Image 1 (cartoon, rainbow, N blue to C red):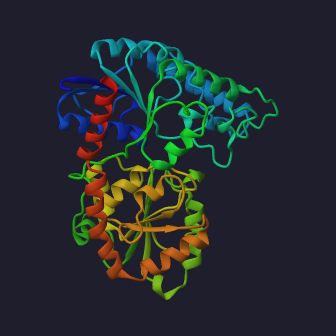
Image 2: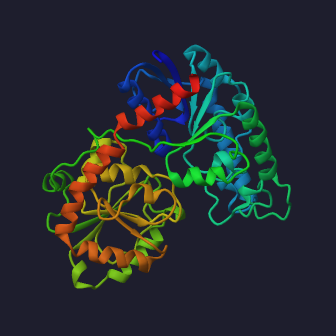
Image 3: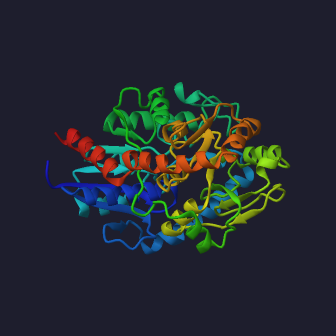
Length: 415
């Protein structure tokens, strides 16, 4: 089918989900046969195919909402900010969609107010909903952690610390279920794990769920020589550099930096690790007592600079307790950087032992240290993994691979 028009909708074109949908839009445009528009609430990239659904008055409204949310958090249970309701907002995004006149609407991460249920219910075109976490099929949490109540309809949410069975997670769950029974969207999961979790929820049990991994521009995220990368970043040439990174830095407990800290303390003093140094990027750094030198780079938005960071390091650790398909993992292997992670969530989709890294079986600092020590002690193996990681990423995560899969999905829906 030629000339299909696709509107991709996301609250932002930046951050984890924002970067993922931006890359999808680029890939689809390169793939051809499609007119693609990325409709966002917050635009940070200067591209003609990105349209903002933001009006002058929205800035003031968002400021008020942020202040109100902060006030509510001060009187609510500590975990309540992990629950997103998506109840507020208006239909303005639909006005923008009318001008793009899509054949298919591809929803991504919508934020708290960008596109509420009331507006989603009015979308006339077939909907493909790309999931970046568990919110789409739960009563409001991004990650359910140990809780399995989304399999039954939520309520008595542990994050809200309430004894009421009919708290708003139960009512919001029911609203989603009713909405999706009417609209019958197709869900796309970047990982096998998230797709499996979605199929366990009554919200998605009778809906089509496909798995299409996120992609990266392998012309941007590609290896350069380690020596030149370290020269650019002013990193020492004689150190073994271990990388940890993400937009939130070290503060997000789900990302498991405390487990990496435990592992590094266990490695401290060992002769195999005498040349070890740690590189960290992200918005925040709370590590103060690491037993190794630390190079903190802050938040990195320039993709070429980020690719240089990956190329400069020897291995990356993603110690997440739960994760979908983190961009950092895909970006790292595309740059030929071996990845060590736990066998949780979508990380086994990325990390293929003996090809691009290793998986620690138990979620603990000791298990992480047990996998790190032999890897860091074997520089020839690190060099071998760099080559096979890049080759594997070109086959699985290139923009053209993802775009082709989405194109075939869109065709099947329209036909």
